[in-house]
Structure formats: structure tokens, C-alpha cells
Length: 301
Image (cartoon, rainbow, N blue to C red; front, side, top):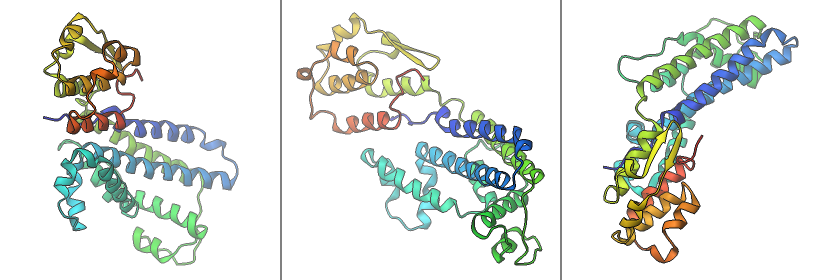
């Protein structure tokens, strides 16, 4: 069975990075003395929050594309299961997911967070004030499009009774409170996702890839080991002895795998004459997809 190309660290990285940056802004809030600096920090902070939510969903759906089926089917795209299962369609699938993320941009915040909650194990959820977060989003929209002048959309989307034409403000206290709210949400996402996807480690992915492609060559433990984020490949006489008994397809796939680890090791075992350019087209596509998505998988982070 083909391994799932998914790493928890890849999913969580943008969330952790956003939290760090937002906490830095929060720490420096009182140093913002000019109204335009306060407004700029507010606009940037919420943009970072929204883009992080979308990036989380994008990376999740790339790893679990079958879970976006419900949304896709609503658009009446036919034969979508076959598309997701096709080895050579991952770039098309990624484009579909990116398009879906554009649609997410127009959703209310609580719906986006519900999407994210659906990625967690059943007993985990995000605690948040949906009305408050939506008001922050709508005020950001007013800042960007009408210089904080209230419009009908703000009234409808927030449920707040304000006169159309009134002008709102963004104070230091409002900025600080907004930052506290979005940082709290992102920290919960980071914590719940860390628990949910704890098993999707680099070591597990590399081992499962080796087992899938090279189970008839040697066991993973006979030629390599993973220490933290670092793969140690120690070619031995075992691999040399197995060389002559491998098919052209197996030699070609193994050469590509070793090439992504270390060029010298790959050349030590295989020359162009050992390889079969016509061999294993299907599995070759699967291996190319792996290194296209995770080009540094076999390297130390």
C-alpha cells in the first residue's frame, strides 16, 4: 500500500511561525505611537492570521485530498475520486485545493475554524468567540476598503447596530485585544494538530517509503537509520551483493532514492548503464512526486 506523503512538521510550521511573529508584535504594541503604525500592525496581523489558517488547510488537504471531496462534489466535478488516486495528477489536485482555499477567503471565520476542527481527532476542538473574531475581520475590511467607515456589509456580518457612515477606530487596546484573540486560536490549533498528527514523523515516512519501494531489496534497518531529523545511510556489502540480482526498475528507483540523499553514494553503486529509463513508470512517478513535495526529506533540517 502506498504510504501517505504527509509530515506533521510541514503542517505545523506555518502555525508556529505565525504565533512567534504575532507574539513579537503583541510584545511591542505599546511602542506604536502613531495611528498609522497601529492600523498597519492591525491589518498585517489579521492578514497573517487568515493566511495561516488557509495554509494549514491547504497543507492538510494535500496530505489528505480525499477529505476535500465533499466540497468538490458540490461543484459537480465528475470522477474526482479517480483524479485523487492517480499518480500523475498531484499537481492538478494541488491546483484544485488552491482554488478551494480562495473560496475559503470569503467564508466567515467560524466556518473556517470548523473546517480546521474537522481535521482533529474527535475529542479536540478550538475555543473561540466567533462574533468577536468576525468583528475583527469586518473591521479589517473596513480599514482596507472604506477607511473604517461603516457599511451595510459590516452591519450584516457582525450583527452590531452601527449607523452606516459612522467611522470606527483602531486603538492600542483594540489592537492588543485582537492580537490576544488570534494568538489564542492559533496556539490551540498548534496544540490540537500536534496531538492529532503526532505519528506522522519524518522517520515514519522515510521508513514507509523504503518499505513500499524497496522491500525486495533490503530492510531499512540493514542500510540506514534515522536520528532525529537526520537520515544516516550506511551502504554496505549487502547492497553491493544485491546489485546484480535487482531488476532494471529496482536499480532505477534505488538510484533515484540515493541521488536525493547523496550524489556520491548514488554514483558509487550505479552508472547510467545500470539504469532502465523505461522501467517502472508508475512507481517512478510516485517517487518523483515524493521528492517534488519534500525535496529535502532525506537531508538534515
